Length: 211
Image (cartoon, rainbow, N blue to C red; front, side, top):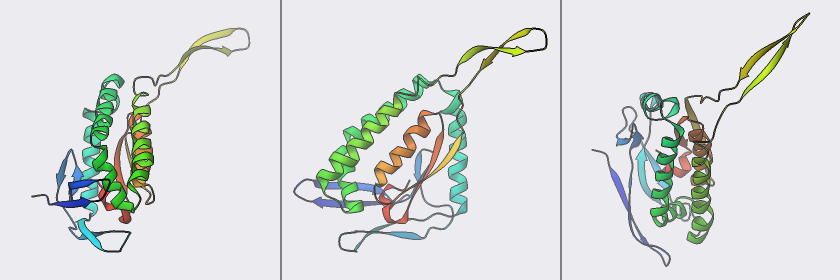
């Protein structure tokens, strides 16, 4: 059974409980580590106190994440799914972030010890706008087809040249510590827009954003 942690917020700008998973998010679900299992402390930057612990990973967990990403690339993203359908999925993700923006803001403020208004006005709004922007590219990335001439010693040969934009496939992304949500979105947005799938890893300082 995957463990969770519930944090009680009692601040002037946000009050309520938020529950987060402390396991690993692989293949569309939360799981306990296959290997390792050591807990990584989530520390409150304001006072240095430990908030909770989240699961660490081993090589088998990384292999499982890459395997799941390859499966997703071949079945539900990448070249197998039309850009218009991928756009619908990414737009749905942005809608969910907007719907729960207060919870995301509270967690981001706690995670890196910043004011709620700053986390909302900068981190959340930037992340939402960035994801929405890249979602708009999913059905607009196209190649080009042009006629070219090949010059021989006595005549010109007309030929057809074209470019085709293809994704790399599975990519790995490491998120920096100072703006973890924004940095994650800046890596996820363009990678997903080009049809790639992402294995995301954040630094030890920002474990509330580690999938």
